[in-house]
Length: 140
Length: 140
DNA sequence: AGATAACAAGATATTCGTATCCTATTTGAC
DNA sequence: GTCAAATAGGATACGAATATCTTGTTATCT
Image: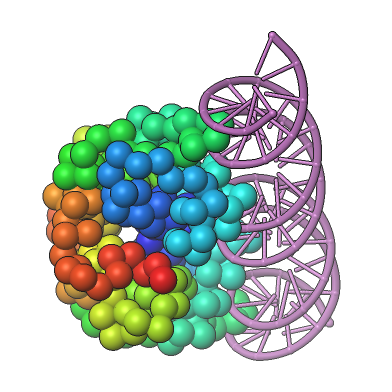
């Protein structure tokens, strides 16, 4: 339902949320989240370009959240790397059905809307706050 | 959110639901639903193997729904060609988190569950009944 | 200067969608 | 009964998108 890329991005963000204000390196994130380092680098760059994280090069550098964890939603993360394909016009590109979708696509889009809403009102802090002492993400 | 294949399968099923008991050929379905004929053939085979439609070869042959349209849900169709990837165990394959997902994956799976439920209680007849006179799918 | 780590761009691999071709089966005409 | 046309079934191959790896460059710190 979401791409591998989106999954990776979310893992990385949750991980970073556990170290507020601290720089975490690609290596560290990759290891903890079990994401291939090579690919993670690209994902992190996307997140950086989207303004969700900031990066610093060189010794002591790495990545860190650009905003407080309670101000970043799952939706933003997913949207940054692999947006939810809401259906706004009939995929069969019919002249009719321009403003009113076929029943089928209406239903499908409704489902996506549910997902979107669910994502919109979940922040990173929700994800690390809930777990208590247990490993928040699945690290170690 | 769903694959192209699932989208095609749904279009075909909705189309077939409009011609109960009648055989419709791959060509006819492809044209009406704007799906590439070559690929549609494969999708239809999958649906056939899944028992959702029946096929007949030869002159006058084609495909037809295997059950009344009010007994086939969107869920069944999607599941036949490209199942919803419910998350049952932590993708990071951690020894812990076996029976209790990380908060992140818990949330994600919740969203998929919403979709699944939405799909489960929509039948093909819901999709062709709603539209009234208007083109039910986007044909014509 | 040297070490560390992000950045950038390309190369490779894998999956998914698509097209093409050939085969098997059914029907209808003669 | 035979033949030809219609139609699904199956296999193969190609292209595009996605995921992964590799290598070199640039910025930052000590």
